[in-house]
Length: 135
Image (cartoon, rainbow, N blue to C red; front, side, top):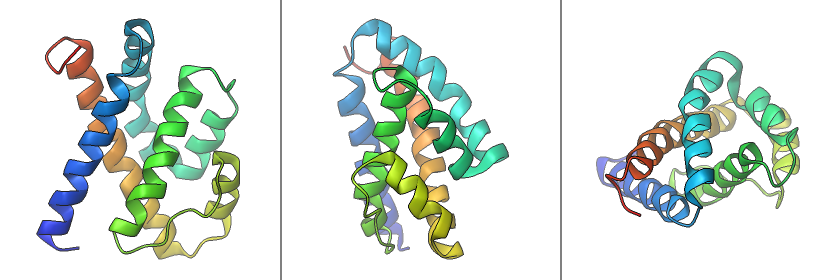
């Protein structure tokens, strides 16, 4: 991926996270900030499939499911930007099934993008929640 495309993807990812973070109530933002701190570790130790399965197992109005939904929506937008096909499913559970059968290079690209998203979300949510990044 070229530096320009990487930079565009990085900016788009940051914008995506920030826009959503500013929509949440303060209490939800605090809970999502705490949740986001552990997501990169979970991704590294368990992989994208296990992480998504754990998050899917939550109630649809929980902050864990909200984070999953945000990650899923981002992957649908980002994967075409990184030269890989996007998930075809319109729901996270369907995407989980896609992950189980996709080719290794595509899976690794999804996982790498999920990791970049998780790392940025952790930093952006912490900044917004501390009052340094917005509302």
